[in-house]
Image 1: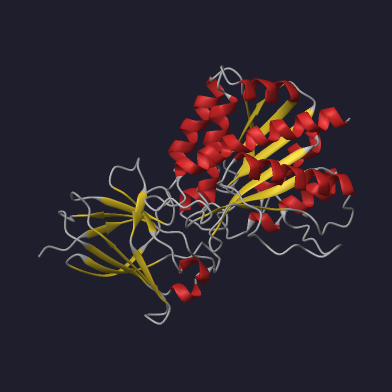
Image 2: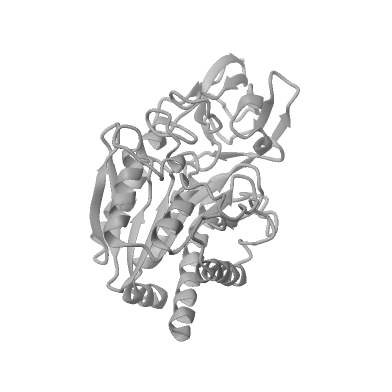
Length: 381
């Protein structure tokens, strides 16, 4: 029986091959450079010949979020367009914590990943489409340590300054799928939601705030192992040019509404995290955040408010994190949107679980909720 071949030598690839025997392989995930974080994987299997694969990813008790492996199924694709799920079993007692993935491809090739990847090539296609659609203007907020541009798209003529940004943590690829859905809506000529949002708002959209980590196959950090979502209090060109570019642009425009889009490894649901612990919290900020959550929950079953992170105590908010820093700095409504790597258990979809398609639709739903939120605010003024 011939051995399969495994490769991760491509954009966002990450896996180390420990051994291969026929259609079975022992694997490990490479850590983010200069960091202890690891959880993202993305690799290709060839030579399968329609045989059942048994792929054991080992050493996962030391990963960033070991609780994320329980009841998790790996993402898999044979054409790199449709991403389903491969049956996966978690055993914390085997080889330092092992996820065993079993899958029988129809042909020779299969790609597996922690979540459906969003490549830098696809990112550049997204930027090109949006910038050439006629309603968006392109702006570069600076360059990364690897020399990549920090891309920003701006659109709308209204006075409300809205900032949407994603993938501070590069392995959370559902965040850029969300951005693709949001941008498709905002650029749709026949969409009344887009028209009314562009009339009321000036949008500043950063689909990928961590290009270096994305290309390198990192889970959580940039080119030198820095967690960007802990840099917002004092970003520097040497450690975090991505945050420095973003925050400086925010200082120039002001911020009225901000959403930082992420993914969560352990919680099987979509939820929001707010800024309740910031020192200068104002009642109207808190009420605006809560009302947006109510509107979004009413709009889609792919969002809920029961599960989420613990709320920070008054005055204890971590100002190194973007949502807290932005809410404190600008007195605005800011939030972190979290999507699951698993499924949204309140409304499950077993074939794909949480998926690129659902991420894109949630982007559209969030913009619909934003329009309702703005209309209510206008009527109350």
